[in-house]
Image 1 (cartoon, rainbow, N blue to C red):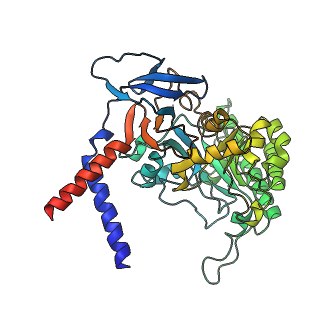
Image 2 (image 1 turned 120 degrees about the horizontal axis):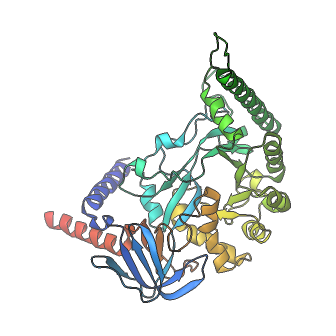
Image 3 (image 1 turned 90 degrees about the vertical axis):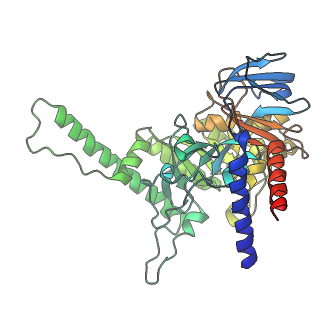
Length: 437
């Protein structure tokens, strides 16, 4: 225990030194990155290319560019520049993930519990990640609303939120829901549902309530606007839970559903048709390859692991070809981490899909433009194009190489991770500490 406390203290001390001395975190949003191999994702590869960033936006992409006065120049000769990596499913930077006391909690909002001091943000930056879709957990059949963040380490939480992203609502099916229903306290009854059919029925029941709630409010609004509204007209009672579900039915929210097996995904697709709500993507979706045609027809994407199948019963029929196969079938696929550790090596995870049939360009799309499309921000990020936000990651080798590492991570033209500068800061702090002793 003493060793653990000592290690924690050392980590905190290091972070304090790091934050107080890391002057490279402060940039103006103006940069010229020169001589890199630019992996634009949507416009091919530019050898010995340059990217000019002005006020956080990509001004020009090409060769032999020049910068205005006082613009920082980064020589990236021999290195590879790609769009910042986007993780479409994680739980970092939150103070709490599951409101697991009830099976239905759409009223909770992850944007209200952002933890901008979570060191997982820095871990993610060290792997080139610039944006995350951080989500409610999968203990609930209907969880809370999620939030998309830029990983602006050192900034207040309000500045991390990407307001332009799709607003999404978490659903979950399968083992996690069924295994989260045991009594939390002695004498407390088991939480419903305990079966797959119960989960399906519960979603339908709650959506019917939401439809009735919407109808009540519509009647009220019509009467209020009529020529002779009733003197005793009162609005319906506000219900935060049903307000959120009504937002889903009105198209103001998009469903993101944790699901593993094909039959459960088909059931949820049927619910979306029955009630008219949109599904952005299935999360994990290990049996998506079995229903690729149905997913393509419905326009529903998947956010998956690269090859971590068979780690529990409902993943038993997952295959490592899932991401590649579904991509070839025309489904919008992204690779996610669902982890505060794996997030730093999403480029490695995407690289695995090359073994299973994708080209390097297709693999890169899984963690850049495809992810941006799933979050509704592809007009802002996800590729290196003039006019887009300058969210970039600089690698020592091609990002698909097993030997590469992220050297620098940039968000809107500001450097939030610089490996070389960080190592120098660390060495200086260590030398200073040694001199004091």
